[in-house]
Length: 76
Image (cartoon, rainbow, N blue to C red; front, top):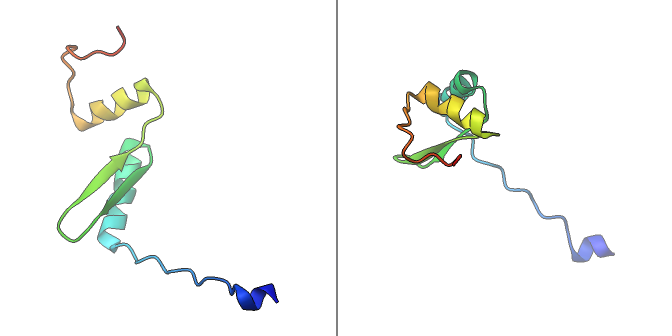
């Protein structure tokens, strides 16, 4: 009787990700050796790179070409 009163909700299908975005995501995962997520709409979005330690963050920043001048060092 419970099933009749509360039928299971239909799961909404996730929209399929653009194959180009999926390929870029995979390429960035390989390049940065970390989890990468690209999300957004037609004209704008965001790229997220995960890091798991300060050293991992610095490794990713090096790969991005970021040079820290030391003026904002959190290790002090």
